[in-house]
Amino acid sequence: MRVIQFREAIAEAMSEEMRRDEKIFLLGEEVAEYNGAYKASQGMLDEFGPKRIIDTPIAELGFAGIATGAAMNGLRPIVEFMTFNFSLVAIDQIINSAAKMMQMSDGQFPMPMVFRGPSASAGQLGAQHSQAFESWYANCPGLKVVCPSNPYDAKGLLKAAIRDNDPVIFMESEQMYGDKGEVPEGEYIIPIGVADVVREGSHVTLVSFGKIMKKVIEAADLLAEEGIEADVIDLRTVRPIDYDTIISSVKKTNRLVIVEEAWPLASLSSDIAFNVQRDAFDHMDAPVKRVCTADVPMAYAPNLVEEFMPKVSKIVEEVKSVMYVK
Image 1: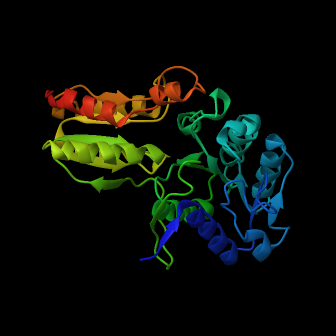
Image 2: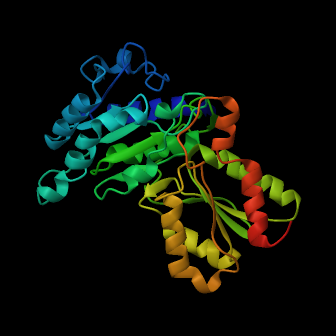
Image 3: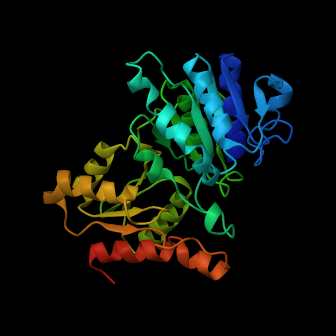
């Protein structure tokens, strides 16, 4: 099977869907002439032209509003934010218009649109460019929130998101665009809301999503060297969350560690922990543990960036704590 980059998988998904449906168009800062800030729309202007690949001003509220109106009128826009940090400027359109329009119109206005771009930390970018917004958007009814961790999932999930009749928040990472992985040539769709068990084990369940999955898998490899086999679950989607897969795993392993690149208060890991204690309490042999970022704004200094982020060593430590081994 061929191997391509994450950014190429994104571009392929958008291009294939645009060839299939002329109602789909892409807009955002630098998506056209510059081929995307992270080259995730490489070659699309040449193929589809400036009426479907549209460069916008630096005005997120404005072009998010244009896209929302377009979706109300039967088009299927894809909005690229250069970073979801900038989506805060547009959050009124996302939360108060796109997410609510179907319900407020009694189903008269489906909202088939995708808001996509990188979220969370990308290294030394400082406090205003390093925030994870998955739990923010997952808190809002009317939105679906997708967080792929590899090129294969990125393509299949983005195609599903573009075809969905609800607004989808599709969160990537600047640190994943160059990641390579196997992606088949043929058509495939990954359904939204279905987690992936990427590794099977019987001692502990590890749950995560997005780029932090790489650290989780590394931790699972280290634990396996010590005889601790983890069930590793990649959520793929954080609204809806595939609780059936999580609960089924916890009933097998009796232990759970959740890893999330986000501040700990009101995080997705908080909600997962609540649901597991509600639905699998009698199967638990240890308290649920979480590995999150530090509860501070992201610093710029590289040593503080390192301290801020979830570490492989911390994941291993928390797994051993629920296993009651040193």
